Image (tube, rainbow, N blue to C red):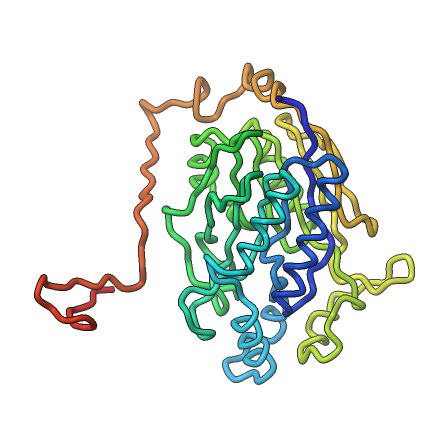
Length: 331
């Protein structure tokens, strides 16, 4: 099968509520599959929502920001966990590949480090990969740790070779080149919002990588904010009135072809899911003129080395006779 439908979800999550967001994701996956979608992409950290307040409330001792961060920790997703199992079951029931952004919490306690992560789930309901954003952008470094090369995943599915990157990773030339070299056919570009520069990055990625791109960003209005959210004012700072609604993020999701042109969208209305049909046969057609890691590459002039080893914060080194809990640590 080379021709099938894919979908970009731009409906908002249930902000700050992991379990309710998971159940909403399950419903959206079923809805997208009901419209024929076989690969479904969600925006950045969709579960349980992007921490946009960090750009307006970034002080060391800002009490509201501290409470919001603690709430994020409590509602983050562990991998593996019951929340991930629920998403995998939804993908299996929909017979669709699902790529969804989550706040990942590392460790068994509610105070573990957070990562900005994309889960890639097969149509059989298997978790094929969890990509952690390599470099949190600007104030995001107050929220997330850094990923490493071990999570630059492009995975085989029965439909296509699927991968994804998060937000400004699409501006990192060497990251793009590494992903292109892995032979992506369908890429999920996950964003919190989609101004023109983010569309530009997504379209360039499709053109450069000769792949299809599912470009997903949230449409969020003031009505979607929790009533008791301590930093609601910070999120409302960028409000504009649109069709009678107070719009915070306008959406703009869609599907882009390997020539950089839109296949579906961009959709700025209140449509929660944007569906487009793709034909993988077009990839070979577009590669005739340009193949960034193939015939148009000059490996005799340029070389890229990618370190795919995991880089844990602590490596425990123990002798054979050391008791549990003993040994030494090196960062």
